[in-house]
Length: 46
Image (cartoon, rainbow, N blue to C red):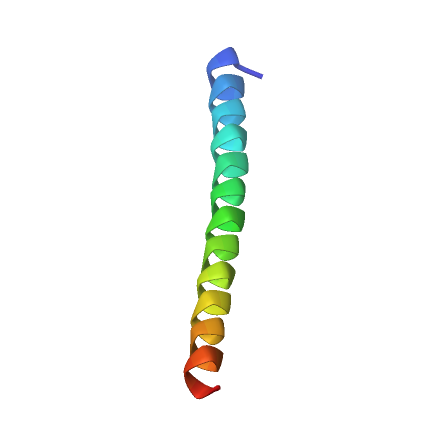
């Protein structure tokens, strides 16, 4: 394969992996925010 294409594909793979990590982190942050909101609601109800 042409080296420029190989480099481009490697870059795409790197960016794809980074995006997956960022998506996972975002999901964790969203879950934590939801837990905190539920916890606050429970405190208000109690």
